[in-house]
Image (cartoon, rainbow, N blue to C red; front, side, top):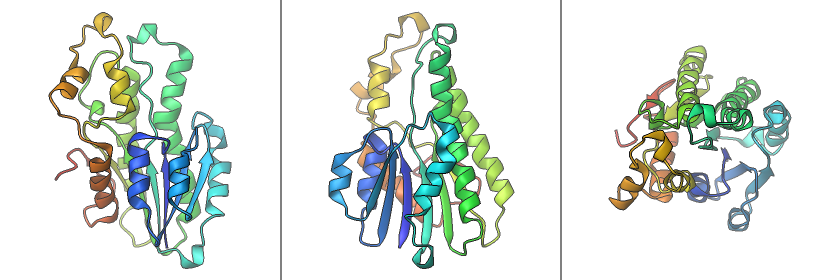
Amino acid sequence: MKYFMITGTSRGLGEAMALKLISPDHHLICISRTKNDNLIAASSSLDYYEFDLRNVNEIEALMDQVFQKIDLANAEGIYLINNAAVLTPFSRIEQATSQELMDNLHINLLAPIALTSSFIGLTQHLPLEKRILNISSASAKQLLPGMSAYSAAKAGLDIFSTCVGLEQGTESTAVKIVSVYPGMIDTGLQEQARNTSTEALNTPDIFKMVKDRGMLTSPHATADKLISLLLGSSFHQGTVVEDLLS
């Protein structure tokens, strides 16, 4: 049995990946602030945790609960997909509230760090395949006004993934970790960006443009590529995959 922990499964890319991973040989552990009843109905081999990732100090206890669902004696592999993300605040930095900034960094950066820490601590002794896939963004490099917190968090996630890869090394018992730019996907984050006024930011309305030109991929198509990366031979320790097609 392969076990998959996925954050942000209430909708969008997280939901799409979970649906693609449903299989008699897979057990899913889904984590999001609100439950996804469609996912729960789709598989009998699925546990769901309603959890707000802003509560970073409670993540260690959450992971202890999650690992009680894993039959370690019969586990073939254990995988963590850090997918949950928020765009807010999409504004000039001086217009952002402290709460918005804390929420952004907690969900986009601190939660994946804490989940990774707990995951490695709970699996480092296990002689099986262990992989962590961090869903990053090209926004870590392609910078736009109004996205300073989001871009900073994603850049931090990339550097964190690379550093942890160096720590883990290439021994057979190492936990492999990769950060990936999934591309432009038609998700709630894109919709939020399209519907936010950019007049005060002096930002070209790039989000509406890519939608109008049909440049967005579907969550399901992207989920296929991400799962192929996660389970395939090109999952190289500590790398940042900027082109999902390569």
